[in-house]
Length: 452
Ligand SMILES: *Cc1c(COP(=O)(O)O)cnc(C)c1O
Image (cartoon, rainbow, N blue to C red; front, side):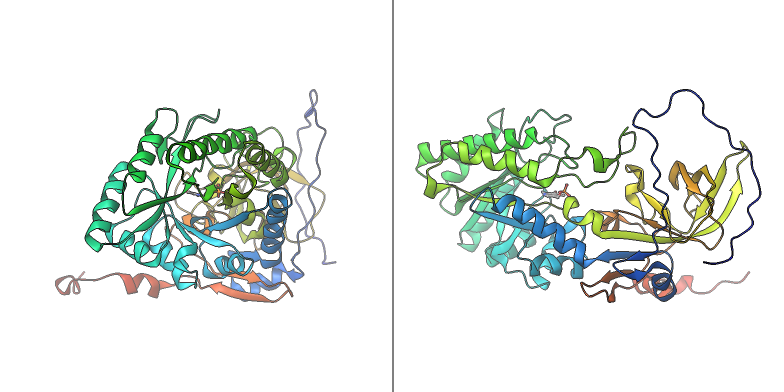
């Protein structure tokens, strides 16, 4: 062990009175390795901050989710939600495992195609599909999930012009007992809007209705809501069968399962309260199996799970830039990562571990990021051992949405590394440099010269 650093003695206020009724938690263990690779080595080689993804954990999560559904229902297919993390190496781990692709924009569609996913295994969701996107999707035989009537009419017009047919589904929104309702996407069930869209599609010569889709929310803590969703989609499917004699081939229940992160303001840590994938699978599959489908007409069950499959496979390693005392006496620790690359710090209290041995002192502190912007706060208050300049920390469960929602503001985006199943690190996305900026900018000639 290294020689211990001198720490200035300080007086610590003891909280007498009510303790947390669940007792105290001591989670202060240094996190020195990820999948067998030393954090210090990763930082030395790839810089700080750096995102690290565990391929082993992705595969473990995926296989566990598939097991949860396939042991309960005969026909199950997952489709990787690109917007959750669309780094190609990540997507391809899912594709190697058998996952199709779920995309919500033209460029995500191009990425999925570029990764080698056949068109008929790409689910194209979202309210923003351009005519060019739709034409490409039609030609590829992709699964087009219609979001609104304007898209339905546009598609109709396009197909007539191209003299082609397309297989489509509609996205349905509904009251599942969770509020606010996500009724801005898709067609509403209760108002009859979804049925109206269905009858229009059934009446069309060039649209074939093959599926029904919903995505009722994200980080859903209620399993019952999925039972309601599966029942309402099944109701539509049964009505389509009895009215038109048409068998709906698949029901797509979307994503939304929570990861084990802790939401801000939650009394208990996420890992203690979020339902498991098995609990969601149980509600969804028993609703479908008990609904009354004929055995050979059971629809394929598609899931577009994002967050729950990737969050705990991602880590962010960062370093302490400085420590200081705020005017009110609180300790502040300034990190080299902030909300610029850890967007989810806005809604999660991420678990953060020191990456080296430390003394037994802990203190409540504010964790700031490096930006010159007051809202750049990683944590308002966290009890951690006293970190010093140059120390490293590991932020846990950051695999979902950070590597797609990160922003290039004041600091550029860092390297992303994947540790393969044999414990070898691979760079999977290069950090941005000044050239990244120069490549995109165009400086008009008349602005090239000045004198000061
Ligand atoms: C974002 C999204 C998903 C994935 O959601 P998670 O909450 O990450 O599971 C799935 N389907 C659609 C349509 C989405 O927009």
